[in-house]
Every structure is written in C-alpha cells, then in structure tokens.
Length: 112
Image 1 (cartoon, rainbow, N blue to C red):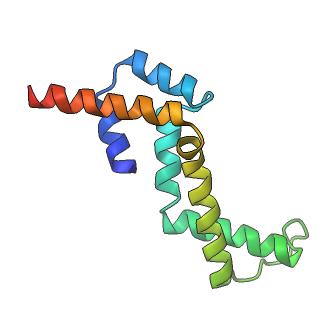
Image 2: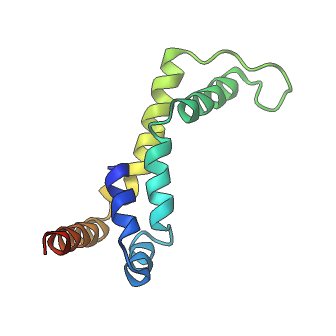
C-alpha cells in the first residue's frame, strides 16, 4: 500500500493533495504514506518495543537501562504501529473513496 501511495503521490496535482489533507483531518499524504512505511520498518518496530519494555519495567524516566524487549513487546509494537497507520484509511470511507477515484483516474490517463 505504501508503494502504491508513493506512486500515486508523484502524479497528484496540488489540489488533490490539499483535498487528501482535508479528508485526512490535516495529515498530509506524505505523512500517511510514511506512517505506513514506519509500521513495517524493523528499526521503528524495535524502538517502539523498547519503549513498551521500558514503560512496563518502570525505567522510562528513572535513567536505568531499559530491559530488552520481548517478542511480546515486538508483536504489540508492530500491532500498534499498524493500527495507527491504517486508522486514517479504515475509519474514513470518504478518504478511501477519494484515493480510489484518483487511482482510477491515473490508470485511465496512463492507458491513454
């Protein structure tokens, strides 16, 4: 989905990008795309898991070395990042419809 968004973004006029931002409640198309990419980036997932482990261990603000994140922390971090990245799409049918219509228009233009 992130790759499709990058391809779509490179062909969109400013008006369409502004409409996307309006429909996405102020988040730019780039922000939406980067959130999708971050949700699949192992280093981002690991950093989020480290925060979960630190908060769970009570050492987030204590200056103690954080505990090593467990597979459970990694799974939870990946799930949270994925949910957060997909929320603008899954809870906003108008945004999805608009993006879909843009994709269809671009495909028709490419075929012409």
